[in-house]
Image (tube, rainbow, N blue to C red; front, side):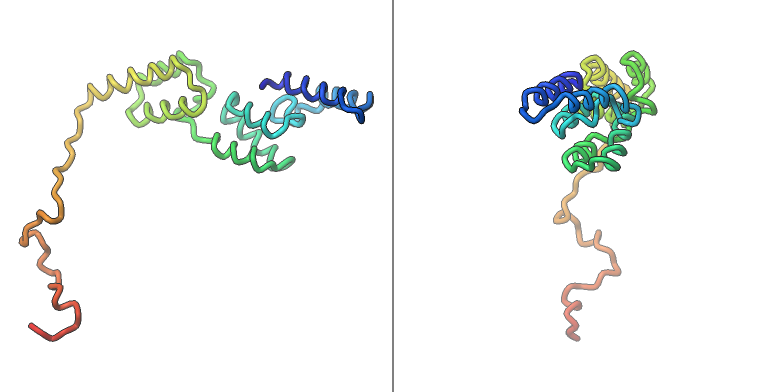
Length: 182
């Protein structure tokens, strides 16, 4: 739901209720036009919990930080703060949210596998842009093919150990009980 439609819904509910008055609508309109400089984004104070939560995915990490700060100091709504806790994260590249798709694609060419995976995870969680996701898959496949796979150490279950592989300084089990038997 967009902010504009939320404002329209608020005004339509206000005008349809029997207790609404012209001064109340004028106050809402003046709030909409005036004091939005201190808000994390325009019209924030007029949005309900669900409307704020639904709109968070459209904002960058910097904007989410501003929303969280404002929310903690003003309304302190648990549901909104919980969603913000989930949404807040470290950008996979410095300034990632401000980068265009082309800039992200160019940065992927020089990125290591760990960074590519962080970009993939971040995109899935936040922007989910198909072009970036497709490029992540292509770059990841190319990078894996170019880098030799590390050899995993051979699996050896503990039951397969030979008696000679047990350290010499270990005390035999029959001596742990404190008995003096040889």
